[in-house]
Length: 190
Ligand code: SF4
Image 1 (spheres, helix red, strand yellow):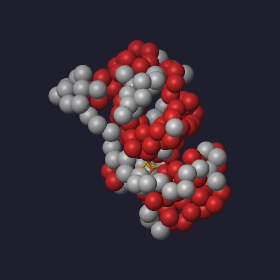
Image 2: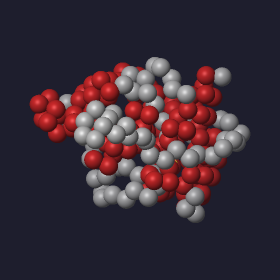
Image 3: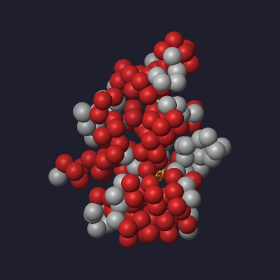
C-alpha cells in the first residue's frame, strides 16, 4: 500500500518517523554534504520512488538538495537523466524497483560512500548514536548492536524497529526497506 502524501516537501518528516536506518542515513548525509555518490543516489532514489514519490517531485527534491553545490544546468546534465531513467522514462524504459535488504547488505563502498546497510557498515559507536537520535529504547539499541556484531543485520534492524516504535515484537522481521516503511506507517495510522 502506498500512502498518497509523499512529496518533496514531506520527505524530511517522513524520513524521521518512518525510514529504516539505511535510508535515514542517506537522507542525513545528503542533507549535510549537499551531495551523494552514485550508489547512495540509486539506493535512496529507488526507495523514494517505491514509497510513491512522483518523478517531478523527485527531480525537485534532488535538485534542491544538490543546489548549494551544484548549479541547475550541471544538475540537468549530470543527474536528471538518471532520475528519469529510474522512473523508466529514459533508455530502455525499464521500471526499476527498490532493493531488498539481502542486496543492500552486500553493497560495499569507499569512505565517501554512504549506501549499504548501516547495521553492517557503521561501527558500534556510530550505530548507538544513530539509533539514539531516533529515540530508540536503550535496551533495544544494545540488542541491535549485539545482533549486528553477530552478522544478523536484518534482525538488528527489527530490534531497532521495536525500540523506535515501542512495539513488543515485529511480526515478520525486516526483508526490505519498503516493507519497514509500510509497517511503520501502518502502526502510526492505527
Ligand atoms: Fe535497511 Fe534492510 Fe539494513 Fe534495515 S536491514 S537498515 S531495511 S538494508
